[in-house]
Amino acid sequence: MSMQDTASSGVALWRLVADGIERGIADGRFAAGDKLPGEMEIAETYRVNRHTVRRALAALAERGIVRAERGSGTYVEAQKLAYPLRSRTRFSEIVGADGREPHGRMIEASEDVATRELARELGLKTGAPLVRIEAIRLADRTPICVSTTWLSADLFPGAGTVFAATRSMTKMLEHYGIGDYRRGATRITAGIVDATDAARLDLPLGRPILVVDATDLDIEGKPLVTKHSRFAAERVEFLVEP
Amino acid sequence: MSMQDTASSGVALWRLVADGIERGIADGRFAAGDKLPGEMEIAETYRVNRHTVRRALAALAERGIVRAERGSGTYVEAQKLAYPLRSRTRFSEIVGADGREPHGRMIEASEDVATRELARELGLKTGAPLVRIEAIRLADRTPICVSTTWLSADLFPGAGTVFAATRSMTKMLEHYGIGDYRRGATRITAGIVDATDAARLDLPLGRPILVVDATDLDIEGKPLVTKHSRFAAERVEFLVEP
DNA sequence: TCAAGTTGTCTATGATAGTAGACAACTTGA
DNA sequence: TCAAGTTGTCTACTATCATAGACAACTTGA
Image (cartoon, rainbow over all chains, first blue to last red):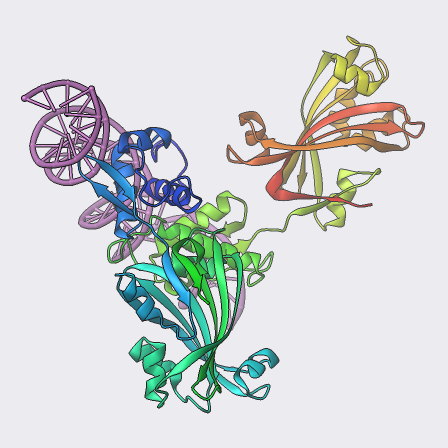
């Protein structure tokens, strides 16, 4: 296939190759540490020029998924981020412990009112005013999860602005005088990524996600925030320790 | 956003715009028959050049999803023709019920002899003389299907000429004294349009077609005609009712 | 009838995408 | 040591992608 003799789909060839290799890693055809086929061999299997393969591998290397070694080969880097689920769960600490650099960014903040479920989680009344924050978290340049966070608009006025500035849930809570907090109940399910999250997580459509619903409590056990997070399943591994 | 100032994702801008518009149609923000915003307005909402919008609209028009009218605007194309598969299936009635005007036209008629399969379908002997009719059916000006019809040359002499004049299978059968008929077995498969049918259906090459093989029977259950029809999949939706 | 707004077409320019070939630099195993 | 195989880099060429501006052709409503 070439761009010259087929109708263009609007998706670059190198992207198709990169997605193919990434899928191979995600579903275990290539394990962490494995050597990928040579660039020429990949080029032949995809019927594509070697330079196009190199473009695909460069994109994967940029995201830390593979690593090229001159003279030797290209190896699968992608070890899943080990994400322990403890009562004290801080994204930045977990990523830092993995030797990677944590980043956070707010996508959107808005006013909302509590549904019955949200009110129960947060210990508020149905219809109580809430702040809803959509945020994304990354390790190095790789998106790990997107999460929707709700918290009381009465207790945390202007929380969206504060979070946008601090880029950290922990620092945002400190701003309101919350020195420490801990994880309450955590529910884990799985699903398929939707189009919006796919774009945010830089995932192809149809990939599995880990869905985590959790509420953080203050030291007295009073609910502070409740979150609905979607993790790229292929980039993270939850560790539940007794 | 432009290819110049952001890291490329490997997905063309026009494709993102086209996907966005298509999603808008799919989730009902634009209904069938609606006028889309002007090209300039779309360009502004997506922060993109008008030519890029035109590329996106061209791709959608190519697939029959929108239709541009010079000087007026770009409109969401009619929804798929709902085509119920009942024992009494008349193209003209189905199209009329959809508020559109049915048309038929003979492309070609020729003498033929029955293969074993055709003979079995029509209750004739292998090698029996047949009339073969190629015809096209349209709703308003949109081609819906092309079909090849075989019927006995002994029972229906000059059928090709009669069909060319009446432009209707029902009227042609009336000419031979057949007042009513009903649909026998119907087999549905799908395929890719070939060059000949593509030209007749005004379809780009590579588009999917619904292939229907069916035999019509008289009121006593005796086979009258057998047909091999190819429907433009993007213009029709079969409804199977219990 | 006419002005405003719409799609269609043309030219032009620069950045990306993809192919092609050649050679350098390096690793591995015999 | 050496040949084979690997990744890295360079040049060259073509097609596509995206932007920009101008104007033609057409529709609509006042």
